[in-house]
Amino acid sequence: MENKFLLKINDQMYHSLINEKYVEIGDELAKDDFSVYGLNNSFYIDLNNKLINRSFVVKNPLIYEKGRVFRLRIDGSMVKKIEDSYSKGKVDVTPILNSFSNGEVTVSASSTASGYPVYNAFNDSSRYWKANNVDTSITMIFQKPIVLTSYSISKYYGTGPGPNYSSFAGSNDGRTWTTLVNKTSLSVNFNNNAAYTHYRFSLSGHTYAAEKFHTVKRIHIYRSYYQKLLILHDDKYKYYDSRSNEWGIIGDTCEEMDFLQYGILPSSIPEAAWAKISGEIELLYYREDDVPEMVISILTEPFTLAEEFDDQTIKIIEYTDNPDQEDSTITLETEPFTFYDEVGDSFDVLYYTDDPDKNEAELEIHHTYSPLDELDGDFELVTWTMEEEAEVQEELKPIFKEKIEDGDLYGVTVDLSKGIVYIK
Image (cartoon, rainbow, N blue to C red; front, side):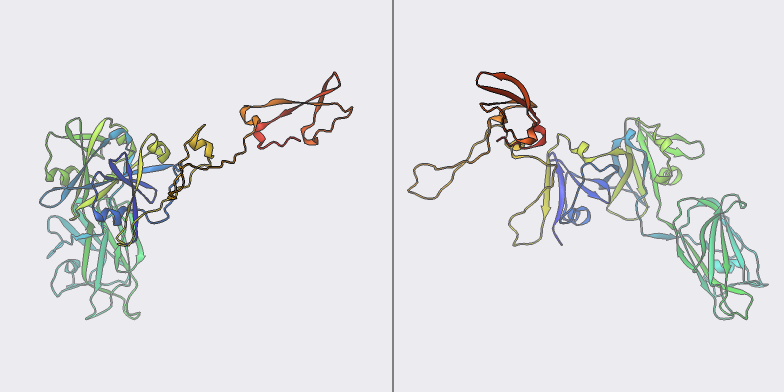
Protein backbone atom coordinates (compact mmCIF):
# COMPACT_ATOMS: atom_id res chain seq x y z
CA MET A 1 0.00 0.00 0.00
CA GLU A 2 1.27 3.46 -0.87
CA ASN A 3 1.79 5.96 1.92
CA LYS A 4 -1.43 7.41 3.34
CA PHE A 5 -2.12 10.50 5.43
CA LEU A 6 -4.72 11.52 8.01
CA LEU A 7 -5.25 14.71 9.99
CA LYS A 8 -5.34 14.66 13.78
CA ILE A 9 -7.13 17.56 15.48
CA ASN A 10 -6.03 18.64 18.98
CA ASP A 11 -4.48 15.21 19.60
CA GLN A 12 -8.00 13.75 19.71
CA MET A 13 -10.00 13.06 16.55
CA TYR A 14 -8.66 11.77 13.23
CA HIS A 15 -10.08 13.34 10.08
CA SER A 16 -9.83 13.06 6.31
CA LEU A 17 -11.24 14.77 3.23
CA ILE A 18 -12.81 12.49 0.61
CA ASN A 19 -14.67 13.81 -2.44
CA GLU A 20 -15.39 17.15 -0.74
CA LYS A 21 -16.66 15.35 2.37
CA TYR A 22 -15.04 16.25 5.71
CA VAL A 23 -14.79 12.86 7.40
CA GLU A 24 -14.41 12.32 11.15
CA ILE A 25 -12.92 8.87 11.72
CA GLY A 26 -12.77 8.86 15.52
CA ASP A 27 -10.18 8.90 18.29
CA GLU A 28 -8.82 5.39 17.62
CA LEU A 29 -7.26 4.09 14.41
CA ALA A 30 -6.86 0.72 12.75
CA LYS A 31 -4.56 -0.01 9.81
CA ASP A 32 -7.56 -0.34 7.49
CA ASP A 33 -8.60 3.24 8.31
CA PHE A 34 -5.56 4.50 6.40
CA SER A 35 -6.32 2.34 3.35
CA VAL A 36 -10.05 3.22 3.32
CA TYR A 37 -10.03 6.88 4.39
CA GLY A 38 -6.39 8.00 4.03
CA LEU A 39 -5.27 10.81 1.73
CA ASN A 40 -2.83 9.96 -1.05
CA ASN A 41 0.60 11.50 -1.61
CA SER A 42 0.57 15.10 -2.86
CA PHE A 43 -2.93 15.72 -1.53
CA TYR A 44 -4.24 19.26 -1.77
CA ILE A 45 -6.67 20.86 0.68
CA ASP A 46 -8.09 24.31 0.03
CA LEU A 47 -8.90 25.63 3.50
CA ASN A 48 -11.19 28.31 2.08
CA ASN A 49 -13.24 25.99 -0.13
CA LYS A 50 -16.90 25.86 0.87
CA LEU A 51 -18.00 22.40 2.06
CA ILE A 52 -21.53 21.21 2.81
CA ASN A 53 -20.95 17.60 3.89
CA ARG A 54 -19.85 16.30 7.29
CA SER A 55 -19.34 12.55 7.41
CA PHE A 56 -18.77 10.31 10.42
CA VAL A 57 -17.28 6.83 10.54
CA VAL A 58 -19.39 4.77 12.94
CA LYS A 59 -18.22 1.40 14.26
CA ASN A 60 -19.38 -1.18 16.81
CA PRO A 61 -23.05 -1.47 15.79
CA LEU A 62 -25.83 -2.87 17.93
CA ILE A 63 -26.59 -6.33 16.50
CA TYR A 64 -30.19 -7.48 16.04
CA GLU A 65 -31.57 -10.71 14.60
CA LYS A 66 -32.05 -9.38 11.05
CA GLY A 67 -29.91 -6.26 10.96
CA ARG A 68 -27.71 -3.88 12.91
CA VAL A 69 -27.94 -0.30 14.17
CA PHE A 70 -25.21 2.33 13.99
CA ARG A 71 -25.60 5.13 16.55
CA LEU A 72 -24.24 8.67 16.24
CA ARG A 73 -24.73 11.65 18.58
CA ILE A 74 -24.76 15.04 16.87
CA ASP A 75 -26.22 18.53 17.13
CA GLY A 76 -29.63 18.22 15.51
CA SER A 77 -29.64 21.83 14.32
CA MET A 78 -26.73 21.12 11.93
CA VAL A 79 -28.68 18.62 9.82
CA LYS A 80 -30.23 19.66 6.51
CA LYS A 81 -30.38 16.17 5.04
CA ILE A 82 -28.87 12.71 5.54
CA GLU A 83 -27.57 10.74 2.58
CA ASP A 84 -28.30 7.06 2.06
CA SER A 85 -25.33 4.77 2.51
CA TYR A 86 -24.05 2.77 -0.44
CA SER A 87 -25.07 -0.88 -0.40
CA LYS A 88 -24.15 -3.29 -3.17
CA GLY A 89 -26.29 -6.18 -1.99
CA LYS A 90 -29.90 -7.07 -2.81
CA VAL A 91 -32.64 -9.35 -1.50
CA ASP A 92 -34.77 -11.63 -3.66
CA VAL A 93 -38.43 -10.79 -2.86
CA THR A 94 -40.01 -12.75 -5.71
CA PRO A 95 -43.42 -14.09 -4.65
CA ILE A 96 -44.08 -17.80 -5.06
CA LEU A 97 -47.42 -18.12 -6.85
CA ASN A 98 -49.56 -21.10 -7.78
CA SER A 99 -52.53 -18.86 -8.50
CA PHE A 100 -53.07 -15.21 -9.34
CA SER A 101 -52.75 -14.16 -5.67
CA ASN A 102 -51.12 -15.44 -2.48
CA GLY A 103 -52.59 -12.85 -0.11
CA GLU A 104 -49.57 -10.56 -0.33
CA VAL A 105 -49.38 -9.90 -4.07
CA THR A 106 -51.71 -10.27 -7.05
CA VAL A 107 -50.48 -10.62 -10.65
CA SER A 108 -52.21 -10.12 -13.99
CA ALA A 109 -51.25 -9.84 -17.67
CA SER A 110 -52.64 -7.87 -20.59
CA SER A 111 -52.47 -10.98 -22.78
CA THR A 112 -52.44 -14.67 -21.90
CA ALA A 113 -52.71 -17.81 -24.01
CA SER A 114 -55.11 -20.43 -22.73
CA GLY A 115 -53.40 -22.88 -20.38
CA TYR A 116 -50.36 -20.66 -19.78
CA PRO A 117 -51.34 -18.28 -16.92
CA VAL A 118 -49.04 -15.44 -15.91
CA TYR A 119 -48.47 -16.82 -12.41
CA ASN A 120 -46.43 -19.62 -14.01
CA ALA A 121 -43.63 -17.03 -14.31
CA PHE A 122 -43.59 -16.75 -10.50
CA ASN A 123 -42.99 -20.35 -9.44
CA ASP A 124 -40.26 -22.92 -9.79
CA SER A 125 -42.17 -25.46 -11.86
CA SER A 126 -41.40 -26.37 -15.46
CA ARG A 127 -44.45 -24.42 -16.62
CA TYR A 128 -44.25 -20.97 -18.19
CA TRP A 129 -46.35 -17.95 -19.16
CA LYS A 130 -47.34 -17.39 -22.78
CA ALA A 131 -48.74 -14.15 -24.22
CA ASN A 132 -50.67 -13.94 -27.46
CA ASN A 133 -49.15 -10.57 -28.37
CA VAL A 134 -45.60 -9.30 -28.77
CA ASP A 135 -46.29 -6.01 -26.96
CA THR A 136 -47.73 -7.01 -23.61
CA SER A 137 -47.51 -6.23 -19.90
CA ILE A 138 -47.52 -7.85 -16.46
CA THR A 139 -48.86 -6.02 -13.39
CA MET A 140 -48.04 -6.85 -9.75
CA ILE A 141 -50.17 -5.35 -6.94
CA PHE A 142 -48.74 -5.65 -3.39
CA GLN A 143 -50.74 -5.35 -0.19
CA LYS A 144 -47.98 -3.15 1.29
CA PRO A 145 -45.73 -0.64 -0.52
CA ILE A 146 -42.33 -2.05 -1.42
CA VAL A 147 -39.15 -0.51 -2.85
CA LEU A 148 -37.87 -2.53 -5.80
CA THR A 149 -34.44 -1.88 -7.32
CA SER A 150 -33.74 -4.82 -9.63
CA TYR A 151 -35.36 -7.55 -11.70
CA SER A 152 -34.51 -10.32 -14.16
CA ILE A 153 -36.67 -12.03 -16.79
CA SER A 154 -35.73 -15.36 -18.37
CA LYS A 155 -37.21 -16.56 -21.66
CA TYR A 156 -38.64 -20.00 -22.25
CA TYR A 157 -36.86 -21.21 -25.37
CA GLY A 158 -38.41 -24.66 -25.58
CA THR A 159 -41.52 -23.81 -27.59
CA GLY A 160 -41.18 -20.26 -28.77
CA PRO A 161 -39.64 -16.82 -28.58
CA GLY A 162 -39.41 -14.44 -25.69
CA PRO A 163 -39.23 -10.67 -25.35
CA ASN A 164 -36.08 -8.70 -26.12
CA TYR A 165 -36.85 -5.49 -24.23
CA SER A 166 -38.46 -4.52 -20.96
CA SER A 167 -39.72 -1.34 -19.32
CA PHE A 168 -40.73 -1.01 -15.66
CA ALA A 169 -42.97 1.48 -13.85
CA GLY A 170 -44.36 2.03 -10.34
CA SER A 171 -47.64 3.45 -9.05
CA ASN A 172 -49.66 3.72 -5.86
CA ASP A 173 -53.10 3.95 -7.47
CA GLY A 174 -52.81 2.04 -10.76
CA ARG A 175 -53.53 5.22 -12.75
CA THR A 176 -50.50 7.50 -12.42
CA TRP A 177 -47.27 5.67 -13.25
CA THR A 178 -43.63 6.60 -12.69
CA THR A 179 -41.21 5.12 -15.23
CA LEU A 180 -38.29 3.42 -13.49
CA VAL A 181 -36.78 1.60 -16.49
CA ASN A 182 -37.35 2.48 -20.14
CA LYS A 183 -36.97 -0.18 -22.85
CA THR A 184 -33.78 -1.92 -21.92
CA SER A 185 -32.53 -5.47 -21.42
CA LEU A 186 -34.30 -8.18 -19.43
CA SER A 187 -31.98 -7.97 -16.39
CA VAL A 188 -31.76 -4.52 -14.83
CA ASN A 189 -30.47 -2.79 -11.69
CA PHE A 190 -31.94 0.70 -11.27
CA ASN A 191 -32.05 3.54 -8.74
CA ASN A 192 -35.30 3.79 -6.81
CA ASN A 193 -35.98 5.04 -3.29
CA ALA A 194 -39.78 5.20 -3.55
CA ALA A 195 -42.14 2.50 -2.31
CA TYR A 196 -45.03 1.53 -4.59
CA THR A 197 -47.96 -0.88 -4.29
CA HIS A 198 -48.26 -1.34 -8.08
CA TYR A 199 -45.49 -2.37 -10.48
CA ARG A 200 -45.80 -3.03 -14.21
CA PHE A 201 -43.53 -4.77 -16.72
CA SER A 202 -43.93 -3.73 -20.36
CA LEU A 203 -42.42 -6.29 -22.75
CA SER A 204 -41.60 -5.77 -26.41
CA GLY A 205 -39.49 -7.14 -29.25
CA HIS A 206 -39.27 -10.84 -30.04
CA THR A 207 -36.67 -13.48 -30.67
CA TYR A 208 -38.15 -14.70 -33.96
CA ALA A 209 -39.65 -12.16 -36.33
CA ALA A 210 -42.13 -14.70 -37.71
CA GLU A 211 -43.65 -15.37 -34.28
CA LYS A 212 -46.24 -13.06 -32.70
CA PHE A 213 -46.23 -14.25 -29.10
CA HIS A 214 -44.00 -14.28 -26.00
CA THR A 215 -42.97 -17.01 -23.60
CA VAL A 216 -41.45 -16.23 -20.18
CA LYS A 217 -40.05 -18.93 -17.93
CA ARG A 218 -39.22 -16.99 -14.76
CA ILE A 219 -39.36 -13.49 -13.30
CA HIS A 220 -37.29 -12.48 -10.25
CA ILE A 221 -37.68 -9.16 -8.41
CA TYR A 222 -35.28 -7.71 -5.85
CA ARG A 223 -35.09 -4.93 -3.32
CA SER A 224 -32.03 -3.28 -1.81
CA TYR A 225 -31.03 -4.05 1.74
CA TYR A 226 -33.15 -2.10 4.19
CA GLN A 227 -31.77 1.22 5.38
CA LYS A 228 -34.04 2.84 7.94
CA LEU A 229 -33.58 5.78 10.28
CA LEU A 230 -35.00 6.62 13.69
CA ILE A 231 -33.79 9.29 16.11
CA LEU A 232 -33.52 9.65 19.88
CA HIS A 233 -34.55 13.19 20.82
CA ASP A 234 -35.57 14.57 24.22
CA ASP A 235 -35.26 11.02 25.63
CA LYS A 236 -37.90 9.73 23.19
CA TYR A 237 -37.45 7.48 20.16
CA LYS A 238 -39.02 9.18 17.16
CA TYR A 239 -39.77 8.48 13.50
CA TYR A 240 -40.62 10.71 10.57
CA ASP A 241 -44.20 10.34 9.32
CA SER A 242 -44.24 11.25 5.62
CA ARG A 243 -48.06 11.48 5.59
CA SER A 244 -48.31 14.16 8.29
CA ASN A 245 -44.83 15.62 7.70
CA GLU A 246 -44.28 15.44 11.46
CA TRP A 247 -42.11 13.50 13.90
CA GLY A 248 -44.02 10.72 15.61
CA ILE A 249 -43.10 9.25 19.00
CA ILE A 250 -42.43 5.52 19.47
CA GLY A 251 -41.71 5.68 23.20
CA ASP A 252 -38.92 5.28 25.76
CA THR A 253 -37.55 2.08 24.22
CA CYS A 254 -36.91 0.82 20.71
CA GLU A 255 -36.71 -2.71 19.24
CA GLU A 256 -35.83 -4.10 15.81
CA MET A 257 -39.51 -4.31 14.85
CA ASP A 258 -39.80 -0.54 15.41
CA PHE A 259 -37.15 0.07 12.76
CA LEU A 260 -38.92 -2.23 10.31
CA GLN A 261 -42.35 -0.73 11.02
CA TYR A 262 -41.56 2.98 11.50
CA GLY A 263 -38.10 3.51 10.05
CA ILE A 264 -37.70 5.41 6.79
CA LEU A 265 -34.98 5.74 4.18
CA PRO A 266 -32.74 8.57 5.50
CA SER A 267 -32.77 10.61 2.28
CA SER A 268 -36.59 10.60 2.34
CA ILE A 269 -36.65 12.93 5.36
CA PRO A 270 -36.91 16.51 4.01
CA GLU A 271 -34.98 19.55 5.22
CA ALA A 272 -38.19 21.06 6.63
CA ALA A 273 -38.49 18.10 9.03
CA TRP A 274 -34.92 18.49 10.29
CA ALA A 275 -35.55 22.21 10.84
CA LYS A 276 -38.00 21.20 13.60
CA ILE A 277 -35.24 19.39 15.52
CA SER A 278 -32.89 21.27 17.85
CA GLY A 279 -30.40 20.28 20.52
CA GLU A 280 -28.51 17.02 20.78
CA ILE A 281 -29.97 13.99 19.03
CA GLU A 282 -28.85 10.44 18.40
CA LEU A 283 -29.18 9.06 14.89
CA LEU A 284 -30.07 5.37 14.79
CA TYR A 285 -29.23 4.05 11.33
CA TYR A 286 -30.60 0.53 10.74
CA ARG A 287 -28.99 -1.61 8.04
CA GLU A 288 -29.97 -5.08 6.94
CA ASP A 289 -26.64 -5.93 5.31
CA ASP A 290 -23.80 -7.37 7.37
CA VAL A 291 -21.21 -4.57 7.57
CA PRO A 292 -18.84 -3.90 10.52
CA GLU A 293 -18.83 -0.10 10.09
CA MET A 294 -20.41 2.62 7.98
CA VAL A 295 -20.09 6.29 7.08
CA ILE A 296 -23.05 8.52 7.95
CA SER A 297 -23.02 11.57 5.65
CA ILE A 298 -24.87 14.72 6.68
CA LEU A 299 -25.58 17.76 4.51
CA THR A 300 -25.13 20.98 6.49
CA GLU A 301 -24.84 24.72 6.05
CA PRO A 302 -21.68 25.67 4.08
CA PHE A 303 -18.45 25.81 6.09
CA THR A 304 -14.71 26.01 5.42
CA LEU A 305 -11.82 24.12 6.95
CA ALA A 306 -10.24 27.48 7.78
CA GLU A 307 -13.18 28.04 10.13
CA GLU A 308 -13.01 24.46 11.36
CA PHE A 309 -9.26 24.56 12.08
CA ASP A 310 -9.26 28.04 13.67
CA ASP A 311 -7.30 27.91 16.98
CA GLN A 312 -6.88 24.14 16.56
CA THR A 313 -3.69 22.10 16.62
CA ILE A 314 -3.40 20.07 13.41
CA LYS A 315 -1.07 17.10 13.03
CA ILE A 316 -0.48 15.24 9.77
CA ILE A 317 -0.16 11.50 10.42
CA GLU A 318 1.62 9.45 7.74
CA TYR A 319 1.32 5.68 7.37
CA THR A 320 3.90 3.65 5.47
CA ASP A 321 4.64 -0.05 5.18
CA ASN A 322 8.08 0.68 3.71
CA PRO A 323 10.64 -0.69 6.22
CA ASP A 324 13.40 1.49 4.72
CA GLN A 325 11.61 4.80 5.30
CA GLU A 326 12.92 6.52 8.43
CA ASP A 327 11.61 10.05 8.06
CA SER A 328 8.84 12.04 6.44
CA THR A 329 8.95 15.30 4.51
CA ILE A 330 5.78 17.39 4.40
CA THR A 331 5.63 20.62 2.41
CA LEU A 332 2.83 23.10 3.03
CA GLU A 333 1.67 25.73 0.57
CA THR A 334 0.49 28.83 2.45
CA GLU A 335 -0.46 32.44 1.91
CA PRO A 336 2.59 34.68 1.15
CA PHE A 337 4.61 35.65 4.23
CA THR A 338 7.97 37.28 5.05
CA PHE A 339 10.81 36.20 7.28
CA TYR A 340 9.94 39.10 9.57
CA ASP A 341 6.37 37.74 9.88
CA GLU A 342 7.84 34.57 11.32
CA VAL A 343 10.63 35.80 13.65
CA GLY A 344 9.52 39.31 14.62
CA ASP A 345 11.93 42.00 15.87
CA SER A 346 14.65 39.68 17.19
CA PHE A 347 15.83 36.10 17.10
CA ASP A 348 18.69 33.93 18.37
CA VAL A 349 21.30 32.53 15.98
CA LEU A 350 22.72 29.18 17.09
CA TYR A 351 26.26 28.43 15.90
CA TYR A 352 27.47 24.84 15.81
CA THR A 353 30.99 23.59 15.11
CA ASP A 354 32.87 20.35 15.62
CA ASP A 355 36.26 22.13 15.34
CA PRO A 356 37.99 21.60 18.74
CA ASP A 357 40.25 24.62 18.10
CA LYS A 358 37.33 27.05 17.89
CA ASN A 359 36.93 29.00 21.10
CA GLU A 360 34.43 31.58 19.91
CA ALA A 361 31.90 32.01 17.14
CA GLU A 362 32.64 34.09 14.09
CA LEU A 363 29.43 35.20 12.48
CA GLU A 364 28.87 37.74 9.75
CA ILE A 365 25.37 39.10 9.31
CA HIS A 366 24.44 40.97 6.15
CA HIS A 367 21.21 42.88 6.14
CA THR A 368 19.50 45.59 4.15
CA TYR A 369 18.64 47.85 7.05
CA SER A 370 18.04 51.51 6.32
CA PRO A 371 16.95 54.31 8.66
CA LEU A 372 13.91 54.55 6.41
CA ASP A 373 12.84 51.15 7.82
CA GLU A 374 12.02 52.98 11.04
CA LEU A 375 9.38 55.10 9.32
CA ASP A 376 5.77 53.96 9.04
CA GLY A 377 3.45 55.23 6.34
CA ASP A 378 4.15 58.19 4.04
CA PHE A 379 6.71 60.87 4.91
CA GLU A 380 8.07 64.07 3.32
CA LEU A 381 11.63 63.95 1.99
CA VAL A 382 13.52 67.29 2.20
CA THR A 383 16.68 67.85 0.12
CA TRP A 384 19.12 70.78 0.39
CA THR A 385 21.53 72.07 -2.24
CA MET A 386 23.89 75.02 -2.72
CA GLU A 387 23.31 74.98 -6.48
CA GLU A 388 20.73 77.27 -8.03
CA GLU A 389 19.27 74.30 -9.91
CA ALA A 390 19.25 71.11 -7.89
CA GLU A 391 19.24 67.79 -9.69
CA VAL A 392 16.72 65.53 -8.07
CA GLN A 393 15.77 62.14 -9.48
CA GLU A 394 12.88 62.77 -11.84
CA GLU A 395 10.63 60.05 -10.47
CA LEU A 396 10.48 61.81 -7.08
CA LYS A 397 9.07 65.03 -8.61
CA PRO A 398 10.54 67.48 -6.04
CA ILE A 399 8.61 70.60 -5.13
CA PHE A 400 10.40 73.86 -4.22
CA LYS A 401 9.66 74.80 -0.63
CA GLU A 402 11.65 77.89 0.29
CA LYS A 403 15.00 79.67 0.06
CA ILE A 404 17.29 79.31 3.01
CA GLU A 405 20.74 80.63 3.74
CA ASP A 406 23.22 79.44 1.09
CA GLY A 407 20.67 77.32 -0.80
CA ASP A 408 17.16 76.21 -1.71
CA LEU A 409 14.79 73.78 0.09
CA TYR A 410 12.86 71.14 -1.93
CA GLY A 411 10.36 68.54 -0.72
CA VAL A 412 8.78 65.33 -2.07
CA THR A 413 6.31 62.76 -0.70
CA VAL A 414 7.51 59.13 -0.65
CA ASP A 415 4.95 56.28 -0.65
CA LEU A 416 6.57 53.32 1.11
CA SER A 417 3.70 51.04 0.17
CA LYS A 418 5.01 50.87 -3.42
CA GLY A 419 8.04 48.82 -2.40
CA ILE A 420 11.76 49.63 -2.30
CA VAL A 421 12.66 53.30 -2.72
CA TYR A 422 16.07 54.31 -4.09
CA ILE A 423 17.24 57.86 -3.24
CA LYS A 424 20.26 59.41 -4.98
